[in-house]
Length: 425
Ligand code: S3P
Image (tube, rainbow, N blue to C red; front, side, top):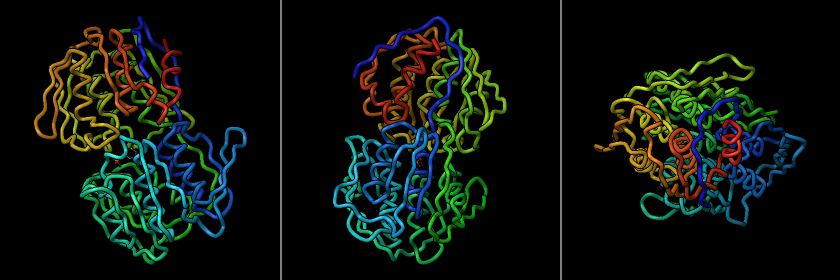
């Protein structure tokens, strides 16, 4: 779907972004794995999380809505293989985490994805899950989807160093570890988001984390998670779009309400402040309110480890485009493997805005235009990538408008994005 985004003279007000996608997937999964009834409040309304919900139902969990809450009943005798393929849609988190779960369920499981997901590497989960005793088959050396997984109720615990920091890979291993015969340990060189460990612990599973330098070692003792009443916090990665909009708009003053305040997720706040952004945090009932006001931004150097999982890089490259000077984005190779090639996508967006942009290996550079007022009007094809859509829209509103082909992809994580954006005008 093609959408025109018009610029506006001033933008302000407050916005509450939807439930965190990461926590939503895990709440559905842990509820389905538990015996009995769990409830979930604040679930992400996106299609990615809906795909996880459907798959949990296919594997035997029952769900219904009770007002705003989702009630999930995990089968007492455990999840069972489905004869139908498990459709993961656009969602890498769904495919990688579900791979971990079905590795511990006897039988053959087929996992499918859309065109974007079918290009993404699954070898990163196939290798450790194989070591645990599951058999994961996909296409070619990168094991791209569709996947056929032969699971086993007799998995072995492993001690595994994740070669490229990834919360999805860590989580797939820990979830498979629930079905193993002994403890499973995962080491990561960069501390990635902790939703899986935190939520498993909350569900009564013995999970210990020990920080080691900038990395972390997580050890899980197998045990069935217990049912819980889950409250999903709001999604910091979605808050980043409105923070950048408030900062780069020449008349911006936006408050994002109740942003989850966790160090692995809010690296973008540190980066934006370093750029000179007037981003003020006050305590809120479940996190912080972040107020972003028009600022003159200066260039910075951003290392991937500062924003693990690099989800906020496309929107930070819009901030860099509005800054004075050359911003350096270092060690950004993982960006190429997201819903689209966000390494090229982030550079292409800045180039469309009128910036000089170049790359060297896994680093890329953006020479900013010193103000969003200098952005060009542009047209972009966002592919199947929700974060490129939202980054483009922010640039269009703060600058001189844009046309976005593929704008309906926001449905995967934030179906109400354009409505929330319109309310701030
Ligand atoms: C996620 C982990 C990240 C992130 C994705 C959600 C998760 O991916 O990009 O949006 O919920 O575990 P990687 O773990 O592959 O970096």
